[in-house]
Image (cartoon, rainbow, N blue to C red; front, top):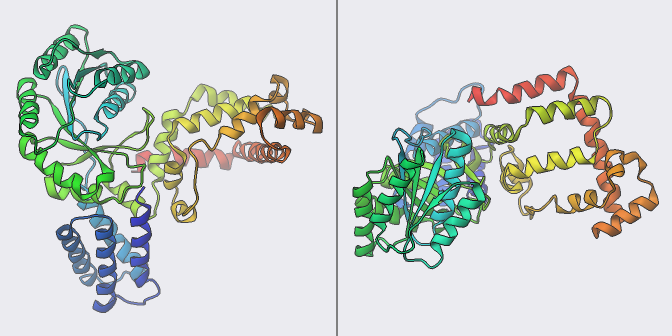
Length: 445
């Protein structure tokens, strides 16, 4: 996420490292490089210029604190300004209606249908809501089928009317159906449309007037850069939407849309999509995103994701097994499944401070656990429960069964042994204190 921008900003801010004081010359040099980094990320020229002017003004207007070096001060100023540029505060979603109606809008191919499913799952699992998805895309082939597949995947009912070609009627009927079934959130998935298509823009405007949604969300593909910002402005002029959804932030995005869209339409980014899985949805936190862009990671979001997947009863069982030296490969598999549910591996690694720079250029496969799982599944139940029984002949059989080399099996056993020892140490008072500190990080934020 934003790898190129992060790298260029790091180089720009490196100009001040080693300097004893801030001067007009070194600040001008730094802000020039920052502006260039933003422009390369497809940020609007006017916004980039205004941003660097504010940074320059603040940098020259402050004396460096005794505890801060000029480089550290500049990083803080850039971080604060980036946070404000992306909205400042985290914006929630309005669920005050009974039912709450959410209208999804956007271009073709922006990911509206998939994100409608992600949002429904998020509201069901995180907010305890009972959602209904309504299929109002009557133009795209198989659009209705796609929403039904998504609904089945997440366990949410979908309303559709294949015999009706009027999306306004379908939206109204869907809301009536949701009310009759006790649904308290109704998500209306509409057809993708171009802002220049007057007929289609009139249609979504008519849907908006007819259903009076609590939330109108504009879904935008973040990989389209500055074009996304221009499209958002055109849609906002017609719909006056409430917030923006940025999809495909896990792709090769330059970041221009995320950084400048708030300044152009004056509407907050509410959610981001960070992968293809239905769990790959995050509330947008401007301050945390600024940290990630500047290579500082996002430990709070990482802890939140871990807590979402944390099963207290399972943790107690594993704790007892570790204490009795009975932690086996079945337990290890269970831990892998929990990690996989947290999101794609590269995104998780990017949340660790400094990891982005350390992993630069490395291809981290989202299926990084596949070969580990293959090796474990090639073991007998007895071998999984008691790894010490794995002699040379058993290792050879496991390697053959999993399509790996014996050295891979040995490496896994070594890593498993090291992890078991580390988990044993974590059972001590120091480890428990550290885990308590991690658990409190959400509150600290």
